[in-house]
Amino acid sequence: MGKLDPYRIREDFPILKRRIGDKPLVYLDNAASTLKPIQVIEAIASFYKEHYSNVFRGVYTLSREATELYEEAREVIAKFVNARSSSEIVFTYNATEALNMVAYGLGMEVVEEGDEIVTTVMEHNSNLLPWMHVAKVKKARLVIVDINDGGELNYEQLSKVISERTKVVTITHASNVLGTVNDLKTIVKIAHEVGAVVVVDGAQSVPHMKVDVRDLGIDFLAFSGHKMLGPTGIGVLWGRLEFLQEMKPFKLGGGTVKEVTTCSITYEDPPRRFEAGTPNVAGAVGLMEAARYLMRLGMEEVHRHEVELLRYTLKLFEEDLHDYIMIYGPRDPEKRCGIITFNLRGLDSYTVGKMLDEYGIAVRVGTHCAHLLHQRLGVEGTVRVSYYIYNTKEEVEYLAESLHDIVGNHCSARYC
Image (cartoon, rainbow, N blue to C red; front, side, top):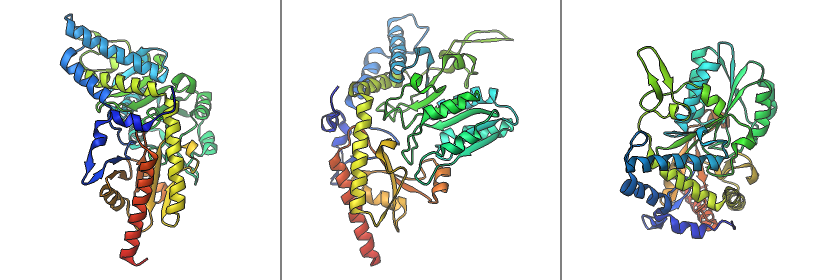
């Protein structure tokens, strides 16, 4: 495994040959969804052309082949996050469904009136709204931990609010707005001392850095396939097997039970009990190939590459846009995943995003499904740049030059 080469990697991504008007595509919206390499596209096509069938129960060749591929995908994803067993890997629709699965399947069972659920102000709505609902229904208290002015979690406050009343600590591993990477080992230590379960939103961490569930000591982890080179419509819930064995299924239907009578239901063992109906087999096959692609690169190298791009971006922003740009989150790129969020003075985020599109640059604008955090920052929206394995320093330079043009044109129009 050598140093990651984004120029060679780009050859695997057909869409990067696209042009936006007369400009080459510069795709900087990877926190929302990543592009797909030809290896993933071909793996999905091969499944549909050569092996397609429904999984489980079929005794004919195609069904056996499809089932074997589906379970092989589970084993590859288990390896990717260092799960103890493939039985700890539940395939879901996306990270949002995985987080809802824990909230309704576990939260509704362990949280009682007067208990507390601890989360943070930096959560994506997918890891906030389900727990708000659980707290409301169970008459529990939702405790929201703040950040400091540097965009990092307030660990002192966290340690104070976690108590014997805390049943669940649910937290993002990496903020989808600030890029802040939270210290899960510290959080786990505090939470487990009072017997709380730790649920982690890994949507922005699993695709960008090495995530080892055993090393971190967490209890649940949710992530999406489409954010890590895989297709849409496939996600993962990893959970400790002892929790999955006790957890109630979020959805009921075909494939989830061993036996049904008029007065009793015997559920399948995990993970099958959580995968009601026909699963997204093609999605699992695509995700398997995506995970293999990333493992060949090495997740340490993926993170190192993003840190290099972040460092270069912060340098250029400081040199070329210092008087015009407001950057949110830690200034130390080692404390971030591959995200930089900012605003330009005098311009709303939507306008900046539309202007960048004229340069062929794709970014995300708005609140990024993190309303509480934007309220905390005191802004209505932000511009988010997010990097991945195929982004280059030349693209960073082009971004900085384009923003400089936008600022110059805006100031000329306003005579500033």
